[in-house]
Image 1 (cartoon, one colour):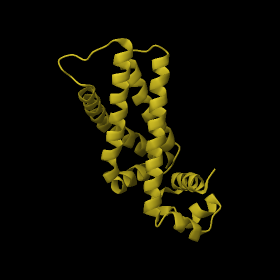
Image 2 (tube, helix red, strand yellow):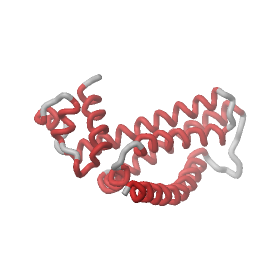
Image 3 (tube, rainbow, N blue to C red):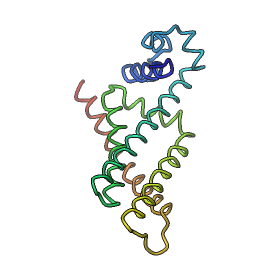
Image 4 (tube, rainbow, N blue to C red):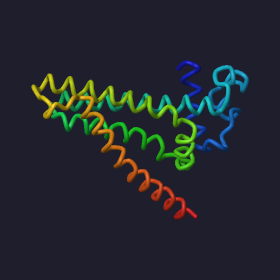
Length: 185
C-alpha cells in the first residue's frame, strides 16, 4: 500500500471514529505511520484531506456500481435490472461506509458543506456510466428507446427520480440517526 492509500485509509478511519471537527492531522498522521510534517507534504490541510477522502469514496462507489451492473448483465438481466443493480450497489457501498460511524451525521453535513463543488462532477461521471451501460445493453439485447429518447435522456430521468427519492431517504436516514442517538442517551 502506497503512502497516499495509507493516508486516505487512515483519514477515513479517524474521521469515522472522531468526526471531522474532532479529528486532527496528528491523529491521521499517527494512524498512517507518518509524521505530521510528512502528512502536510501530501495534503495542505484537513479540509484538503477530507476532500480527497470524499473523492476516493465516490470513486470506489462508482467502481462498485460498474461491477454490479456488469455482473447483472452477465447473469442475463434486462436493462432495468442492470441499472437498478448499479444504483443499489452504489448506495449500499456509500451507506456501509457511513453507517458504521458514530459521527455519520456530522460527516454527511461536512460532505455537503465542503465538497458541494465536486457534486456536479460526480453526477456527470455517473451519468456517463449509465449512458455507456444503456448503449451497451441496448446494442447487445437488440433494444431501442422509444419516442426519440436518447440514452443521455434516460440517464437524466433516472437521476431525477433518484434525486427525488434521495431527498426522502436522506430525511429518513437523518431521523433514524437522530433516533438512534436519542436511544443511546
